[in-house]
Image (cartoon, rainbow, N blue to C red; front, side, top):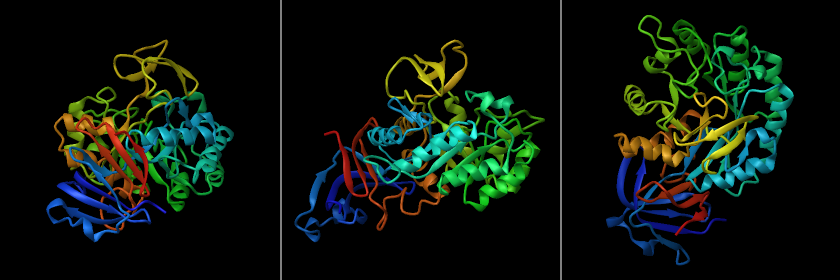
Length: 393
């Protein structure tokens, strides 16, 4: 059972709106039972054993949801360890993330099966962020756009391989990235959709026409838009053009100002009206450890002044993000995107895409997964299922 809690004086941002100072009551079942503007709040309505938290000067949002993350705090999905996944869960809570989808790199089927089983073993044992399921970033990717992925680990779409991965996951795969121009992608897509997997196009050299065909096949989302995909040209719009122009496509974006120029990030958000853009981190295992040389996905990488990981032997090659999701929200807000929209892209939008009906919003009946931030978007307190798992002050 959760502790009955009344949070007062927080500036509540939810459902794309700044609701101003409010009181939020969390019941013993870990759910939001009341949302009241401060001028209408009567604390005597609630049980006498209710814990009171004065959140003056802070912003309260639904807990952030990171749907594309490889690692953090020195732990990564490629460790193939349940303990590593659980350490990720604990570390993520300190950044206001209350739910995440551990994301696997492309690999041979036996390697990916081990990593999948590690996630499954960790689910239900979290002390921090909820593990929602599994995101497969591969192995059916284009070697022409492999980015930091291991080219030797890529393979052509194969129904039998996907079925192996689905079986290992106990049907907990929520998302999968594929290059839609590869042969046999339609059969693999059909199997994925039959298992309620959200299909993303990414690490792809598809033409614009192939991207549109993929949408007809059931692809509905784009992996780290603008990175590792066919470029936009005025006579050949490519996957980038499809992402920007097709109103049905939802788009991930890494808003660190390194992977994509901030003005391009803003343009994407404006062109998609914000409701189809999802902020992600795509962060690597050494994220949050500070500048230095590390190993990530078997490669030697360096985190330096640019704020992202680069190849230790080829600094011009980006290898992954060192972003945390609260910083992504802070970044887009500082670039001129309205705060409610910035929050929505890390809460409500991913919740809707992945069918998380009880998460992503501050409303009666929703699970009390909440994050309290100061004026710099640094985390002050975090609740998961009404349980306070972090309290900085």
